[in-house]
Length: 167
Image 1 (cartoon, rainbow, N blue to C red):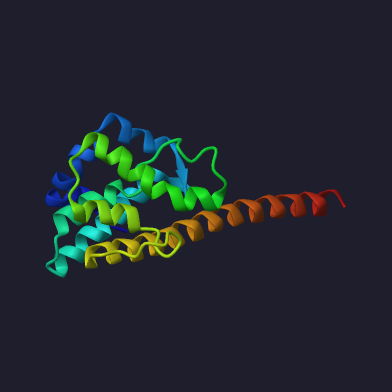
Image 2 (cartoon, rainbow, N blue to C red; image 1 turned 135 degrees about the horizontal axis):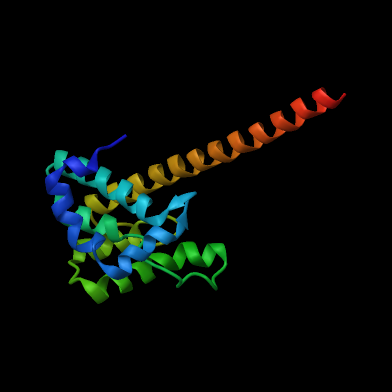
C-alpha cells in the first residue's frame, strides 16, 4: 500500500490535525468497515500525491482532505440519508473550531459528498478530493466485505467438517 510515514512533507502538512485531541477520537469510530482515522489518512495521502503531481494547491487540499470527515457523534441521531448530507457541514464546523480554514478548504470539506449533497465543488482540488473519497470508500467497503465473507466462509467450513466428522 502506501508508506505515508516516509513522506516527511505529507507528515508535516497533517501533523497539527492528527495530533489534535478531538481528531484523535476518529481512531475509535468505524467508517466504511475501518476506522474513520484510517479513511482520512488514505484520502489525504492520495489527495496529497495527486494534487502535488498536478501542481495544484496541494497543501490546502491535503489539510482539507484530512478534515473532510472530522465529525464525531453529530450524526448519531440522523437517518442514513440525513447523515450523508449533513456530515460535511458538521466536519467544517468542527474543523473551524480548531483551524482557520481558507475558502478552498471549506469548499473541499463541504462539497466532498457531491452529488449526494447538491452543491457542486468550485475548485479542481475539491473535485479531486470528491473522487478520491469515493474511490477510497468503495475500496474500504469492499475490503471490509471480503473480511466478513472470509470469516463466514471459515465458519461454514468448520461446521461442514464437523458435520462430516460426526456423520
